[in-house]
Image (cartoon, rainbow, N blue to C red):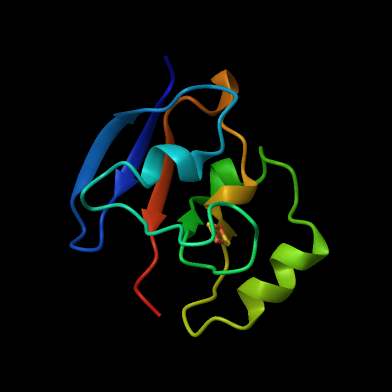
Length: 104
Ligand code: FES
């Protein structure tokens, strides 16, 4: 199973198995230090906000306009910002580094 390298809000790094074919949100919301994902993946709450490191950010499909619009409203929006409910985990993303964004 591929793994994600997850950086929590305290800066600690964790290696977490992430099932291919699921949204990465579904892995992150199971973690004590993970995300809330309040809307369950409907692209409406932004509580699944993460930052994806540069080498990996180019390997995943670009965000759709509704994701981009929601991200741009966030105080902590920056380069690499994604809504983790909109990103599919794949075997090719094994080792991807994902940082949990601060609470809004
Ligand atoms: S879980 Fe709500 S926007 Fe991603």
